[in-house]
Image (cartoon, rainbow, N blue to C red; front, top):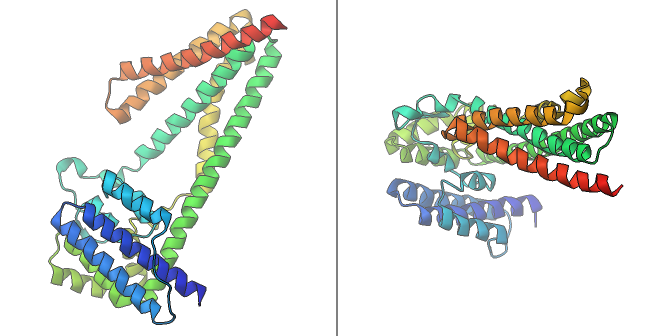
Length: 339
């Protein structure tokens, strides 16, 4: 039995199973019909593949059954990233209607321009990275200060904590984004292969998506058939509309790792400043004050994303940092007294 054929057949059968689960969970008639048709299209493609070999009886995997249950519990929109990861076609309909491939039609004034506001997520991630470095290294510095270590020892410990944390964050971010990118590239590769093998079926799937977003069915079919003649444009449209991915923005592992490293470092260096610049006996209160002010600023900045009060957000973050720093200082003082 050709392993490649079996993998593709299983993938299509799983997509059909999950598309049917989405259809059952969907209340909107147009979307329900879309995913019923997507399930039928996936079954049809599985049937085409099965002509080349004799497949075993299909049974959905444990993962597929779990995803189907979660779709029923939380709804298709909330599960969109997971559905895209398992190659359920058409999940881009949850981005809103479109006039042309890759450009959602806004459904209200507030949504105009949202697709171009990608910097907010990066800024939010950077703020959280600074916050992680600040709280973790402030806690470390307060702990060793509580143990009454010499200034040079505090600085050495703080620098070691900064580097360990920054490299750990960078490595984790690199692996995460790299794995995600490889998964996306695999999905796009599958879509490229299917486009070459079943161009008419892929055109019909695109047409169904555009129809679900408000296009007249015949217009959608005509548009999709014209689009499918240009292989690169068709693959771009299928990637965006079926997989819900932006092929031009799959994520940069190196860029994500560097950003994470720098963000963590910027936060972790703050409590070390008074010790490095010789604040002497005032280094601990100066570091605590500097960290507190910085945490307040971070909390206030995060309120920009939550829409909550900047004062409340700043005070909450400063309070959390004070608890962490105070706890480690107290624990450090116990060890210092015991020595």
